[in-house]
Image: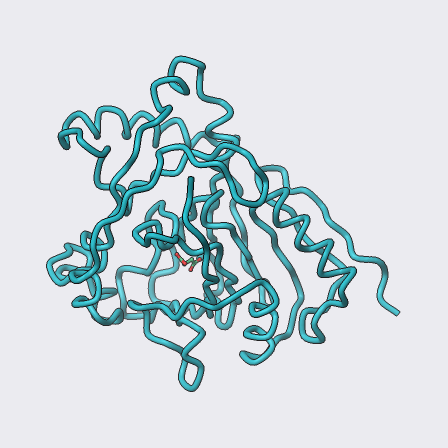
Amino acid sequence: MMAQISITACNGPGAEIGNVDLSHGPDDDDFAAIRQAFADHGLIFFRGQTITPEQHIAFARRWGDININRFFTPVDGYPEIAEVRKEPDQATNIGGGWHTDHSYDAEPAMGSILVARELPSKGGDTMFADMAAAYDALDDDMKARLEGLEAVHSSKQIFGGKAAYRVESDAGGRLHNPDAADALDDVIHPVVITHPLSGRKILYVNAAFTTGIRGWSREESMALLMPLYTHALQERFITRFNWEPGSIAFWDNRATWHYALNDYQGERRVMHRITLEGCALH
Ligand code: SIN
């Protein structure tokens, strides 16, 4: 019999969940504990798992509806799973900059469950930053300044037909459907949201998809946003996750940013990502 499920907080944001086998589907008590850890930490990790794509999908479905990714190539036979792949001859990678997935959607995705499938011999870590802690650490003047502000978010500059990422990079060639990005209307979210699960205030802007503050010029917007981004990337808000065979990371897109490091040139890295539908943010 397996020992009782364990939840161990990381040094930075996140917690590692132990003594659970996701291939069998955790029982209801273990699932409730995992759900609570996810709400508390916004970022959870599992080690030593062996799960098939079917089991990945089954675990994801326990959390809610799956978002079928518009831009990433799906895993063959599994439209629910987006493939995050970098080939040895490829210079750029998917997710190689600080971002939160899907902030360009009116109802941004709740989270993503990323399973390691093929790892480089070294490198390829993912960094995560805690946007609740980043908000809490702002001074009162800045918190007052952000109150009531709204930000514009867009997928075009990353995934659209004219995006530098697509035009200049080989990663672009492995994504698909720039028309979907170009057709998508920009969306507005509050700069500070109340997290739907934890009730905590979250700094909800990111360098990849936030294009500015609603009603402000680009210059005015960047004068506010750039120092916020610098603030949010202090080491104390960051966890660096080192992938091993059998590792799984599950992050809350509303509560965290992430960044896939691209430091394993000449080797392959393949990950399977399922993204879960979210809700409107306030
Ligand atoms: C992503 O941005 O979803 C990819 C993360 C990773 O490959 O580590």
